[in-house]
Length: 218
Ligand SMILES: [Zn+2]
Image (cartoon, rainbow, N blue to C red):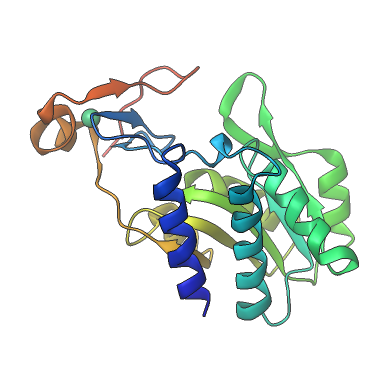
């Protein structure tokens, strides 16, 4: 059921033509890899697509988690708004917390003192980090590790779109993860992109905003 709902949402995201970067251009993803971006932030709040997206996430959680996560944590800033919307739908059953971006380095995420205090009062409940799109799990992994460092034992990641078969940052940290939509999308290291990927086809390349160009160190 959840897979069908995910497939429907994926088709709607493709049809919207505002969420997935169009052919002919690609972007430096937060992982440092090159690929066509999936931008949930382009979905207008309160639009039909927004409600479909949030509804699909809520249905998935209702069906797939037993028990439901008690706390849902955002990956700043991308999932701050959806986490608030999801938690509103679950009412008293779920607490929403936001992670924060380091103002000096937007690639670094941390938990503020309020969020940390709430987690430390709830060390024995399931906590889920909500991400929209994952390539390696780098950002959601930072948040999940911070939650674990606060003393929470049961922390996992739920991503809406997982664009590669495995998320190595989460695998390495032994953080469990699930995805509502597994949609393999061509994603290249800068070197491979130049050799066989979008760069080799002369597709327009957009470096990440506000970050120095940083190739993947491997
Ligand atoms: Zn490229």
